[in-house]
Length: 408
Image (cartoon, rainbow, N blue to C red; front, side):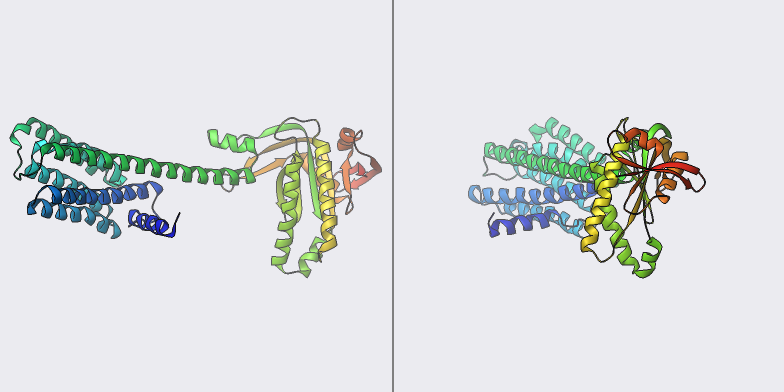
Protein backbone atom coordinates (compact mmCIF):
# COMPACT_ATOMS: atom_id res chain seq x y z
CA UNK A 1 0.00 0.00 0.00
CA UNK A 2 1.36 3.40 -1.02
CA UNK A 3 1.87 6.24 1.47
CA UNK A 4 -1.02 8.14 -0.11
CA UNK A 5 -3.34 5.14 0.30
CA UNK A 6 -2.25 4.71 3.92
CA UNK A 7 -2.95 8.39 4.62
CA UNK A 8 -6.41 8.07 3.08
CA UNK A 9 -7.10 4.95 5.16
CA UNK A 10 -5.99 6.71 8.37
CA UNK A 11 -8.16 9.72 7.52
CA UNK A 12 -11.22 7.52 6.99
CA UNK A 13 -10.52 5.63 10.23
CA UNK A 14 -10.32 8.93 12.11
CA UNK A 15 -13.59 10.07 10.57
CA UNK A 16 -15.35 6.82 11.44
CA UNK A 17 -13.92 6.89 14.97
CA UNK A 18 -14.95 10.48 15.79
CA UNK A 19 -16.21 10.61 19.38
CA UNK A 20 -15.11 7.08 20.23
CA UNK A 21 -14.42 6.74 23.94
CA UNK A 22 -12.29 3.67 24.42
CA UNK A 23 -13.52 3.34 27.98
CA UNK A 24 -16.88 2.40 26.46
CA UNK A 25 -17.85 -1.16 25.64
CA UNK A 26 -17.12 -2.65 22.24
CA UNK A 27 -20.86 -2.67 21.51
CA UNK A 28 -21.28 1.05 22.21
CA UNK A 29 -18.26 1.88 20.05
CA UNK A 30 -19.74 -0.27 17.29
CA UNK A 31 -22.99 1.74 17.30
CA UNK A 32 -21.03 5.00 17.28
CA UNK A 33 -18.92 3.95 14.31
CA UNK A 34 -21.98 2.90 12.32
CA UNK A 35 -23.58 6.27 13.13
CA UNK A 36 -20.53 8.07 11.77
CA UNK A 37 -20.45 5.88 8.67
CA UNK A 38 -24.17 6.52 8.04
CA UNK A 39 -23.62 10.26 8.49
CA UNK A 40 -20.84 10.26 5.89
CA UNK A 41 -22.93 8.15 3.51
CA UNK A 42 -25.95 10.42 3.93
CA UNK A 43 -23.85 13.46 3.07
CA UNK A 44 -22.38 11.58 0.10
CA UNK A 45 -25.91 10.74 -1.06
CA UNK A 46 -26.76 14.44 -1.29
CA UNK A 47 -23.41 15.27 -2.88
CA UNK A 48 -24.05 12.70 -5.62
CA UNK A 49 -27.50 14.17 -6.23
CA UNK A 50 -26.00 17.65 -6.54
CA UNK A 51 -23.53 16.38 -9.13
CA UNK A 52 -26.25 14.60 -11.13
CA UNK A 53 -28.60 17.59 -10.91
CA UNK A 54 -25.82 19.85 -12.19
CA UNK A 55 -25.89 18.02 -15.53
CA UNK A 56 -29.66 17.48 -15.72
CA UNK A 57 -31.27 20.64 -14.39
CA UNK A 58 -30.54 24.27 -13.57
CA UNK A 59 -32.89 24.33 -10.55
CA UNK A 60 -31.26 26.20 -7.69
CA UNK A 61 -33.76 24.61 -5.31
CA UNK A 62 -32.30 21.16 -6.02
CA UNK A 63 -28.75 22.43 -5.50
CA UNK A 64 -29.55 24.32 -2.31
CA UNK A 65 -31.70 21.60 -0.71
CA UNK A 66 -29.06 18.92 -1.31
CA UNK A 67 -26.31 21.16 0.03
CA UNK A 68 -28.26 21.89 3.23
CA UNK A 69 -29.23 18.23 3.69
CA UNK A 70 -25.60 17.15 3.20
CA UNK A 71 -24.50 19.57 5.94
CA UNK A 72 -27.34 18.34 8.12
CA UNK A 73 -26.02 14.78 7.91
CA UNK A 74 -22.51 15.91 8.86
CA UNK A 75 -23.87 17.53 12.03
CA UNK A 76 -24.17 14.01 13.49
CA UNK A 77 -20.36 13.77 13.44
CA UNK A 78 -20.13 16.98 15.46
CA UNK A 79 -22.63 15.71 18.04
CA UNK A 80 -20.66 12.47 18.39
CA UNK A 81 -17.45 14.42 18.79
CA UNK A 82 -19.02 16.32 21.70
CA UNK A 83 -20.11 13.05 23.26
CA UNK A 84 -23.83 13.58 22.60
CA UNK A 85 -24.43 10.03 21.43
CA UNK A 86 -28.22 9.91 21.58
CA UNK A 87 -28.51 13.36 19.99
CA UNK A 88 -26.20 12.26 17.14
CA UNK A 89 -28.38 9.23 16.39
CA UNK A 90 -31.60 11.23 16.58
CA UNK A 91 -30.15 13.89 14.30
CA UNK A 92 -29.07 11.25 11.77
CA UNK A 93 -32.59 9.80 11.58
CA UNK A 94 -34.13 13.28 11.35
CA UNK A 95 -31.76 14.15 8.50
CA UNK A 96 -32.74 10.94 6.68
CA UNK A 97 -36.43 11.59 7.29
CA UNK A 98 -36.12 15.18 6.12
CA UNK A 99 -34.35 14.06 2.94
CA UNK A 100 -37.25 11.74 2.08
CA UNK A 101 -39.85 14.44 2.65
CA UNK A 102 -37.90 17.07 0.70
CA UNK A 103 -37.36 14.74 -2.27
CA UNK A 104 -41.01 13.68 -2.24
CA UNK A 105 -42.04 17.33 -2.36
CA UNK A 106 -39.55 18.33 -5.06
CA UNK A 107 -39.56 15.23 -7.29
CA UNK A 108 -42.72 13.35 -6.29
CA UNK A 109 -43.42 9.69 -5.62
CA UNK A 110 -42.25 8.70 -9.10
CA UNK A 111 -38.68 9.59 -8.15
CA UNK A 112 -38.45 6.36 -6.12
CA UNK A 113 -37.23 8.18 -3.01
CA UNK A 114 -39.80 6.34 -0.88
CA UNK A 115 -37.45 3.35 -0.89
CA UNK A 116 -35.25 5.28 1.55
CA UNK A 117 -37.94 4.58 4.18
CA UNK A 118 -36.78 0.95 4.24
CA UNK A 119 -33.33 2.20 5.22
CA UNK A 120 -34.77 4.46 7.93
CA UNK A 121 -36.66 1.48 9.37
CA UNK A 122 -33.45 -0.49 10.09
CA UNK A 123 -31.04 2.43 10.68
CA UNK A 124 -32.12 3.21 14.28
CA UNK A 125 -31.25 -0.33 15.41
CA UNK A 126 -27.78 0.04 13.90
CA UNK A 127 -26.96 3.46 15.37
CA UNK A 128 -28.79 4.11 18.65
CA UNK A 129 -26.97 3.15 21.87
CA UNK A 130 -28.67 0.54 24.01
CA UNK A 131 -29.87 3.08 26.56
CA UNK A 132 -31.96 4.77 23.84
CA UNK A 133 -33.45 1.62 22.33
CA UNK A 134 -37.02 2.81 22.98
CA UNK A 135 -36.39 5.91 20.85
CA UNK A 136 -35.11 3.63 18.08
CA UNK A 137 -38.37 1.67 18.22
CA UNK A 138 -40.33 4.90 17.83
CA UNK A 139 -38.39 6.10 14.78
CA UNK A 140 -38.63 2.70 13.07
CA UNK A 141 -42.40 2.57 13.60
CA UNK A 142 -42.70 6.13 12.27
CA UNK A 143 -40.74 5.17 9.14
CA UNK A 144 -43.03 2.14 8.61
CA UNK A 145 -46.15 4.28 8.91
CA UNK A 146 -44.66 6.92 6.60
CA UNK A 147 -43.92 4.30 3.94
CA UNK A 148 -47.48 2.94 4.16
CA UNK A 149 -49.04 6.40 3.90
CA UNK A 150 -46.78 7.41 0.99
CA UNK A 151 -47.64 4.27 -0.96
CA UNK A 152 -51.36 4.73 -0.29
CA UNK A 153 -51.26 8.37 -1.40
CA UNK A 154 -48.73 7.97 -4.22
CA UNK A 155 -51.11 9.29 -6.89
CA UNK A 156 -51.39 12.60 -4.99
CA UNK A 157 -47.66 13.06 -4.42
CA UNK A 158 -46.38 14.87 -7.46
CA UNK A 159 -43.15 16.78 -8.00
CA UNK A 160 -42.88 20.57 -7.77
CA UNK A 161 -39.63 20.84 -9.73
CA UNK A 162 -39.47 19.76 -13.36
CA UNK A 163 -36.59 18.96 -15.65
CA UNK A 164 -35.63 15.57 -14.20
CA UNK A 165 -36.64 12.30 -15.82
CA UNK A 166 -38.52 10.20 -13.19
CA UNK A 167 -36.86 7.06 -14.55
CA UNK A 168 -33.39 8.51 -13.91
CA UNK A 169 -34.48 9.66 -10.46
CA UNK A 170 -35.64 6.15 -9.61
CA UNK A 171 -32.37 4.62 -10.78
CA UNK A 172 -30.33 7.13 -8.74
CA UNK A 173 -32.43 6.94 -5.55
CA UNK A 174 -32.87 3.17 -5.52
CA UNK A 175 -29.28 2.54 -6.61
CA UNK A 176 -27.71 4.84 -4.01
CA UNK A 177 -30.02 3.53 -1.26
CA UNK A 178 -29.06 -0.05 -2.10
CA UNK A 179 -25.39 0.88 -2.10
CA UNK A 180 -25.74 2.59 1.29
CA UNK A 181 -27.49 -0.50 2.70
CA UNK A 182 -24.66 -2.65 1.39
CA UNK A 183 -21.97 -0.49 3.00
CA UNK A 184 -23.81 -0.23 6.34
CA UNK A 185 -24.49 -3.97 6.57
CA UNK A 186 -20.94 -4.88 5.56
CA UNK A 187 -19.55 -2.32 8.05
CA UNK A 188 -21.75 -3.74 10.79
CA UNK A 189 -20.60 -7.25 9.86
CA UNK A 190 -16.93 -6.22 10.07
CA UNK A 191 -17.46 -4.47 13.42
CA UNK A 192 -19.29 -7.49 14.81
CA UNK A 193 -16.49 -9.79 13.65
CA UNK A 194 -13.91 -7.53 15.31
CA UNK A 195 -15.95 -7.45 18.52
CA UNK A 196 -16.21 -11.24 18.49
CA UNK A 197 -12.48 -11.59 17.86
CA UNK A 198 -11.79 -9.18 20.71
CA UNK A 199 -14.11 -11.12 23.04
CA UNK A 200 -12.51 -14.42 22.02
CA UNK A 201 -9.04 -12.98 22.68
CA UNK A 202 -10.12 -11.75 26.12
CA UNK A 203 -11.76 -15.11 26.86
CA UNK A 204 -8.55 -16.89 25.87
CA UNK A 205 -6.56 -14.64 28.21
CA UNK A 206 -9.00 -15.45 31.03
CA UNK A 207 -8.87 -19.17 30.26
CA UNK A 208 -5.07 -19.14 30.10
CA UNK A 209 -4.94 -17.32 33.43
CA UNK A 210 -7.31 -19.84 35.01
CA UNK A 211 -5.28 -22.75 33.65
CA UNK A 212 -2.14 -21.19 35.14
CA UNK A 213 -3.84 -21.16 38.55
CA UNK A 214 -6.03 -24.26 38.49
CA UNK A 215 -5.90 -27.72 36.86
CA UNK A 216 -7.90 -28.22 33.66
CA UNK A 217 -10.60 -30.40 35.27
CA UNK A 218 -11.19 -27.81 38.01
CA UNK A 219 -11.44 -25.02 35.42
CA UNK A 220 -13.94 -27.10 33.47
CA UNK A 221 -16.10 -27.70 36.56
CA UNK A 222 -16.07 -24.02 37.51
CA UNK A 223 -17.02 -22.91 34.01
CA UNK A 224 -19.82 -25.48 33.65
CA UNK A 225 -21.40 -25.36 37.12
CA UNK A 226 -19.73 -22.47 38.93
CA UNK A 227 -18.46 -24.79 41.66
CA UNK A 228 -16.14 -27.71 42.20
CA UNK A 229 -16.04 -30.66 44.56
CA UNK A 230 -13.10 -32.25 46.42
CA UNK A 231 -11.78 -35.37 44.75
CA UNK A 232 -9.99 -38.32 46.33
CA UNK A 233 -6.98 -39.71 44.48
CA UNK A 234 -5.97 -43.13 45.72
CA UNK A 235 -2.49 -43.30 44.26
CA UNK A 236 -0.46 -40.27 43.18
CA UNK A 237 3.07 -39.00 43.75
CA UNK A 238 3.96 -35.71 45.42
CA UNK A 239 7.22 -33.86 44.81
CA UNK A 240 8.61 -31.32 47.28
CA UNK A 241 11.71 -29.15 46.85
CA UNK A 242 13.42 -26.67 49.15
CA UNK A 243 16.62 -24.64 48.91
CA UNK A 244 19.38 -25.24 51.43
CA UNK A 245 20.51 -22.15 53.30
CA UNK A 246 17.66 -20.03 51.98
CA UNK A 247 17.43 -17.93 55.15
CA UNK A 248 21.07 -16.83 54.80
CA UNK A 249 20.56 -16.04 51.13
CA UNK A 250 17.54 -13.85 51.94
CA UNK A 251 19.62 -11.85 54.41
CA UNK A 252 22.51 -11.40 51.98
CA UNK A 253 20.75 -10.03 48.88
CA UNK A 254 18.23 -7.29 47.97
CA UNK A 255 14.61 -8.39 47.87
CA UNK A 256 14.24 -7.56 44.17
CA UNK A 257 17.25 -9.73 43.32
CA UNK A 258 15.81 -12.60 45.34
CA UNK A 259 12.44 -12.35 43.59
CA UNK A 260 14.09 -12.22 40.16
CA UNK A 261 16.23 -15.26 40.96
CA UNK A 262 13.26 -17.31 42.18
CA UNK A 263 11.15 -16.20 39.24
CA UNK A 264 13.85 -17.34 36.84
CA UNK A 265 14.32 -20.70 38.56
CA UNK A 266 10.65 -21.46 39.16
CA UNK A 267 9.85 -20.41 35.60
CA UNK A 268 12.13 -23.17 34.33
CA UNK A 269 10.68 -25.60 36.90
CA UNK A 270 7.20 -24.86 35.51
CA UNK A 271 8.43 -25.79 32.04
CA UNK A 272 9.91 -29.02 33.37
CA UNK A 273 6.59 -29.91 35.01
CA UNK A 274 4.82 -29.45 31.70
CA UNK A 275 7.40 -31.55 29.86
CA UNK A 276 7.10 -34.45 32.33
CA UNK A 277 3.28 -34.32 32.81
CA UNK A 278 3.64 -33.28 36.44
CA UNK A 279 1.16 -30.74 37.85
CA UNK A 280 2.54 -27.74 39.70
CA UNK A 281 0.49 -27.17 42.85
CA UNK A 282 2.02 -24.14 44.56
CA UNK A 283 5.12 -22.31 45.71
CA UNK A 284 5.54 -21.09 49.26
CA UNK A 285 8.60 -18.94 49.62
CA UNK A 286 11.42 -21.07 48.27
CA UNK A 287 9.44 -24.33 48.46
CA UNK A 288 8.06 -25.85 45.27
CA UNK A 289 5.29 -28.44 45.40
CA UNK A 290 4.05 -30.57 42.49
CA UNK A 291 2.18 -33.82 41.96
CA UNK A 292 1.57 -36.37 39.24
CA UNK A 293 -1.53 -38.51 38.71
CA UNK A 294 -4.17 -35.89 39.48
CA UNK A 295 -5.44 -35.07 35.99
CA UNK A 296 -5.75 -38.63 34.74
CA UNK A 297 -5.10 -42.13 35.95
CA UNK A 298 -1.53 -43.21 35.18
CA UNK A 299 0.87 -45.89 36.36
CA UNK A 300 4.08 -43.92 35.81
CA UNK A 301 3.31 -40.98 38.14
CA UNK A 302 6.24 -41.79 40.44
CA UNK A 303 8.69 -42.17 37.55
CA UNK A 304 7.51 -38.87 36.07
CA UNK A 305 8.20 -37.06 39.35
CA UNK A 306 11.70 -38.54 39.57
CA UNK A 307 12.48 -37.52 35.98
CA UNK A 308 11.19 -34.03 36.74
CA UNK A 309 13.40 -33.86 39.86
CA UNK A 310 16.45 -34.99 37.88
CA UNK A 311 15.84 -32.28 35.29
CA UNK A 312 15.41 -29.68 38.04
CA UNK A 313 18.70 -30.61 39.68
CA UNK A 314 20.50 -30.71 36.32
CA UNK A 315 19.17 -27.26 35.48
CA UNK A 316 20.40 -25.82 38.79
CA UNK A 317 23.80 -27.45 38.33
CA UNK A 318 24.21 -25.82 34.90
CA UNK A 319 22.82 -22.53 36.12
CA UNK A 320 25.23 -22.35 39.05
CA UNK A 321 28.17 -22.51 36.64
CA UNK A 322 27.31 -19.12 35.16
CA UNK A 323 25.57 -17.32 38.03
CA UNK A 324 27.04 -15.64 41.07
CA UNK A 325 24.38 -16.98 43.45
CA UNK A 326 24.68 -20.74 43.93
CA UNK A 327 21.45 -22.58 44.66
CA UNK A 328 21.50 -25.98 46.34
CA UNK A 329 18.20 -27.85 46.50
CA UNK A 330 16.77 -30.79 48.38
CA UNK A 331 14.09 -32.97 46.77
CA UNK A 332 11.62 -35.23 48.53
CA UNK A 333 9.15 -37.57 46.80
CA UNK A 334 6.40 -39.69 48.33
CA UNK A 335 3.46 -41.64 46.86
CA UNK A 336 0.05 -42.25 48.38
CA UNK A 337 -3.54 -41.05 48.66
CA UNK A 338 -4.58 -37.39 48.71
CA UNK A 339 -7.71 -35.27 48.54
CA UNK A 340 -7.57 -32.40 46.05
CA UNK A 341 -9.86 -29.40 45.81
CA UNK A 342 -10.35 -25.66 45.71
CA UNK A 343 -10.64 -23.83 49.00
CA UNK A 344 -12.11 -20.38 49.61
CA UNK A 345 -14.63 -18.24 47.73
CA UNK A 346 -12.26 -15.51 46.57
CA UNK A 347 -8.76 -15.83 45.11
CA UNK A 348 -9.25 -19.55 44.52
CA UNK A 349 -6.45 -21.78 45.77
CA UNK A 350 -6.12 -25.37 44.55
CA UNK A 351 -4.47 -27.51 47.17
CA UNK A 352 -3.82 -31.10 48.27
CA UNK A 353 -4.72 -32.51 51.66
CA UNK A 354 -3.85 -35.66 53.55
CA UNK A 355 -1.02 -37.44 55.32
CA UNK A 356 0.77 -38.02 51.99
CA UNK A 357 1.49 -34.29 51.75
CA UNK A 358 2.97 -34.13 55.25
CA UNK A 359 5.07 -37.22 54.63
CA UNK A 360 6.41 -35.85 51.33
CA UNK A 361 7.43 -32.67 53.14
CA UNK A 362 9.24 -34.68 55.83
CA UNK A 363 10.98 -36.79 53.17
CA UNK A 364 12.27 -33.58 51.58
CA UNK A 365 13.47 -32.17 54.92
CA UNK A 366 15.36 -35.40 55.67
CA UNK A 367 17.14 -35.32 52.31
CA UNK A 368 20.41 -33.80 51.17
CA UNK A 369 21.11 -30.98 48.75
CA UNK A 370 21.58 -32.15 45.19
CA UNK A 371 19.94 -35.53 45.83
CA UNK A 372 16.48 -37.03 45.31
CA UNK A 373 15.16 -38.56 48.53
CA UNK A 374 12.20 -40.92 48.12
CA UNK A 375 9.96 -42.91 50.44
CA UNK A 376 9.53 -46.67 50.46
CA UNK A 377 6.11 -46.40 48.76
CA UNK A 378 7.66 -44.46 45.88
CA UNK A 379 10.61 -46.87 45.75
CA UNK A 380 8.24 -49.83 45.23
CA UNK A 381 6.80 -48.08 42.18
CA UNK A 382 10.09 -47.21 40.48
CA UNK A 383 12.62 -49.80 41.67
CA UNK A 384 12.65 -51.53 38.28
CA UNK A 385 13.35 -48.27 36.40
CA UNK A 386 15.84 -46.42 38.60
CA UNK A 387 18.84 -47.44 40.65
CA UNK A 388 18.39 -46.43 44.27
CA UNK A 389 20.55 -46.44 47.38
CA UNK A 390 18.84 -47.51 50.58
CA UNK A 391 19.35 -45.13 53.49
CA UNK A 392 17.66 -47.39 55.99
CA UNK A 393 15.23 -45.90 58.44
CA UNK A 394 15.61 -42.17 59.01
CA UNK A 395 13.85 -40.23 61.73
CA UNK A 396 11.30 -37.74 60.35
CA UNK A 397 9.73 -35.07 62.54
CA UNK A 398 6.22 -36.11 63.54
CA UNK A 399 6.50 -39.35 61.58
CA UNK A 400 9.04 -41.39 63.46
CA UNK A 401 11.31 -43.78 61.56
CA UNK A 402 10.72 -43.86 57.79
CA UNK A 403 12.41 -46.02 55.18
CA UNK A 404 14.14 -43.75 52.65
CA UNK A 405 16.16 -44.08 49.45
CA UNK A 406 18.38 -41.87 47.35
CA UNK A 407 17.88 -42.09 43.61
CA UNK A 408 21.28 -42.44 41.94
